[in-house]
Length: 135
Image (cartoon, rainbow, N blue to C red; front, side, top):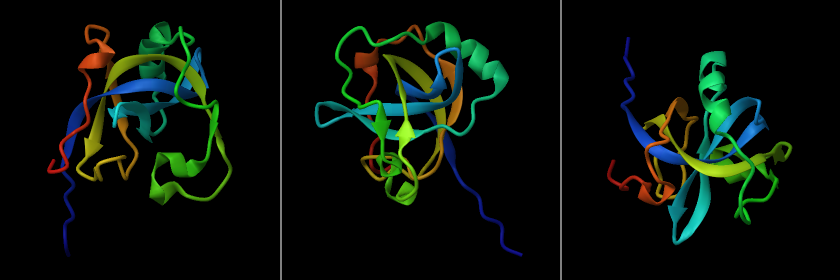
């Protein structure tokens, strides 16, 4: 019997939107600055009730023009999400959150769902950068 082990690491990303509402966020939509623009790089799996309570106070409407549309095709979350219905986003003022990710980063998005860890209010969004392609 073979054992498959996946390496996971934590990384800071920008929460630029949620799937759900600001008072009941079901998933976090993660973004990173790539080529000078905030790009969607993935999303978390379902956020636990405890994590929702921790995240909700930090979610606020965008204070300026948001770079993302309020509805995106599933393919916006990576090539393995192509097809299906478009996804409605609740855009928020970008804030730093820590997520757990596996090593499947292709330079523009995460292949698999992320796991929400915590909000990082002590960090400024300009301090966030993409992982290296060698991670």
